[in-house]
Length: 392
Image (cartoon, rainbow, N blue to C red):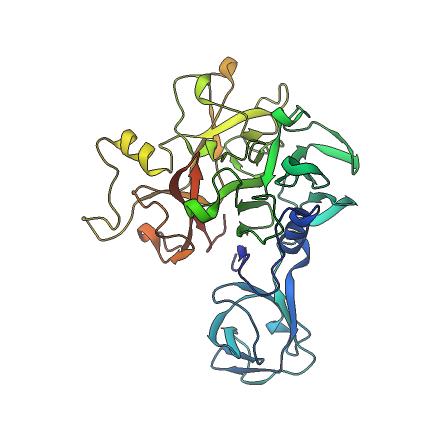
């Protein structure tokens, strides 16, 4: 289905600010998941040859992003549209099948949210849900109320199987509530300065990449990975095929699910969690992808001597793993491969941070465009690709 994937970044007009203020993480999630941002009233929309040409002086939108269009007659122009920016005052989007001519009405535009909802809210706290009927029932709780130097640099993330209010739920992941047993949304250094962030997602899954205090973007040019939502389980109708991944309180980077797995449980950790095992026994379990780390050094050691160069000497392109295979840390079940991760591809090349925030068309002949984002693991920089064509 077209236009299912949205992505946004902190450098866009009216993007929410992520900093050390309580509630700033909730503000970022609200804008991307449920509200949208940067609403404008368009001056005109004219359809010509299957293309809608929209004008507004200083519209402030970025190329290739999704907008929600509303208030138009003909109504076929309304809804989520992927735009092409042609100037500071005009952008276009496809209008296949719409007759030529000027649209009427008070026509509005805003950056598209994912269509999620907020089940419960409190001061600097929120519980997010999915309205997509294909999604699992799991909920995401974010607590950004903390005070003090440490808490100003992160917000706590917990997934629940169900909840009855903002503070009460069943089946948490992670199960520990102490600081040492958590998933945390990194907010960067303890300052009021706006920190960089990138978000990519659809109606079931999102990824949020942010700055960290321990390995800051200003020094490493890369971000830390967080996320919540469904993965594609090999078990039909799997009600627990939902994950949560976040950082630790040491602010030292947490992209641990991007490391290689295999051979034993020592290579697993609690950074990337599934709600339950496929057999539904017990609580949250560690989950990790099979393959080399996305960091340059680990990729090199995994593949011998040096990781493949980019662009490739074979075809001047790139090979990627897509989708990623995900393995359970369940010794009693033999560490089964549970399914595949939605939306993420692994570039099999030593890229580092040089492709950060670039859109790569038709990667590996897939017919899909990917957004490259530089990520880090304890100071070592690599790259992750997000499928922005979809569907995931």
